[in-house]
Image 1: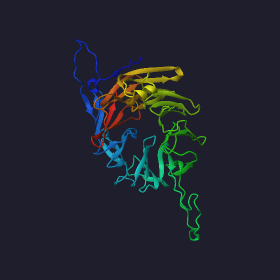
Image 2: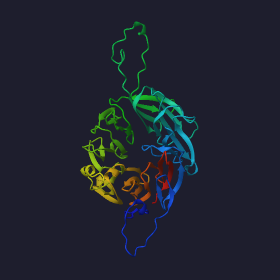
Image 3: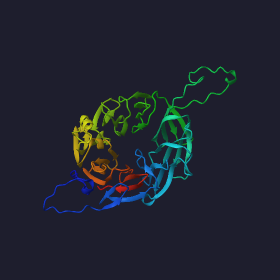
Image 4: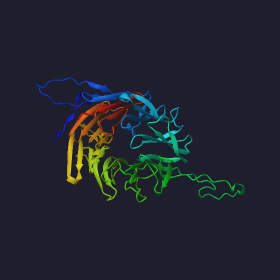
Length: 462
């Protein structure tokens, strides 16, 4: 029988949360902590597998959580250092042996340039890097075998400047590269200008045509590049579980779109401004969760959209944390009573942090309290990482505190109906996190370039 829902908060004094007591209640000192990261203190009783300090000046990138590689034997850590993007690989005992997996400069770089995207293959054995060459007129795709030595090799190049470059693995042998070419300037004799009237230049070879749109790159064998014809401009793509659909999430130069690879069609999404795809349903290929604006575009919500039916459901208001949990069921961080109007008019009003577990086929909605308050504007900054293997969600949540908000890392196990506070501290710097492949461990990357950055691996209690 599952245990009743309970959140274990062992450091209430540090979080600034008041509690009731009676005259007979024993007074206890704040509990000790087993480990300290840059801004986070790990709760007593949580098993810490390792604390690894990153090189001086290294800072996490908020959109780049740790990447588990080689059956969790290595962890890829992406950040900035000395003005350049760099990726370290941490392996060996306690993940304490470091190496450079991708760099923009120096002897460990496959070539000099600017890293615009990185992606590991599904089996975690190959790393692909999209690199813009100096001058910005060429994009190279570099592939590195992680069990071999060497910085990797360029397997495909695309001439010209691009406004959007994103890369994903469709399987262990195929990379999907989405390119949006920068518009070429109109000049005399080029792109519709006046024809060249100089007969001495009539035999000059025209410049090579620039590639645009979606490219499929096969990395095995001799390798190949095959363009897929879509009429819409590309932006950063998020792919469905089996690569049938992709959502172009939009940016300043392109609206959100839905790509259907099976039918080679591309349609505009009904939201005209950029969105952020959180997750895809593993059991329903065309269903995804995304963060998008409300009708007034003054706050955000989490929505569930089905491509086949065009139906959409609102799951949470002023939140960025939600995930599928199997069989089209979802888990969402938020507050049951919060409305868009309340979030807009009272962004600093205290409200209880809650989890909503939706099972639409059974007509069930379970709401769980996490036992502390947050605010709509803080709730909107929350994040969630879900492990299907462990059936457990890890959340980054913020609570009111002075002089700065308080950050909490909380896990919730659906199997045991239990929540735990893993770590907490002042909301300074950046914290990113990710689950190991089988959900046994959680990696936290915490810090900034000034205070330093630490990578911590925890084993959440169960």
